[in-house]
Length: 353
Image (cartoon, rainbow, N blue to C red; front, side):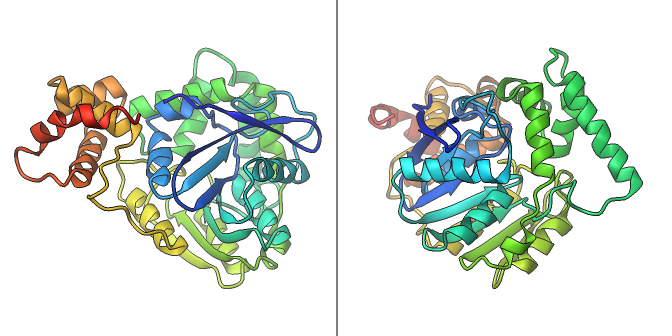
């Protein structure tokens, strides 16, 4: 699926690319680095986020300044600039109220926005987030040396064809990924941002401190964090939840900063968000398949095995099985004949895609 991006103009004139998909109550995902509105739809790392959240929400997402389809050379990276970007997208989407999803570096911006706009944010969901960036926290000499080394690797190796330097970041974000997923994330880094933008953005993010703002958030808040997160320490999520009045904290069992489709933490995350926001699960009577599910079913109809489908779509066999399970549920099919019966219904399911 290719994204039809719209553009919102931020306070300093930077053009921010944004898009909307899915149906249901509005959910706005705060921009982070390492996204690409178009490229992410074919991603073995991000596509399940887009598809599964789109089945529950009208998802508004945007590429961060300096990233993806947004302007690549903004004049400023700061909390004020990121806040202005979010405000511009919300205004362009004409949203009066919505759930705000702040992941990773976007968590600090989400906290600040929720504090400043209590009437707009009905629910605040944070995942893998922090209240203090790496440069705002107290650190040991070893931690400081590691941060400096990572900064040098961005400067030296980010734009090179050889991904050896970028693989360090990939291994930190998704250590449990397959080699296919890791290679995709290696390439995403180079495709989504320049070395200069990656360095400037990451350094500005590392200096953020919204701990005071967190104490003033009035929106009902859900904070989730992977207990083995190697990019943002688990303790940062726990501390952030402790600062926000009444926040609910849910540990997720995963070593990945970005939850992958094949791990138990992903359906746990979806269930928690769905229950917290109050979205009714969509059951089997609804025979509306996602773009990815139609792609899988089309290959089934052509006689491909699950392994062959996974190879062609850059998915694991387990992910293919998950998509098939979702298809059977939506079409109310069971038993050994479900695969053939689903393939037979492909013509009636394709026109809406």
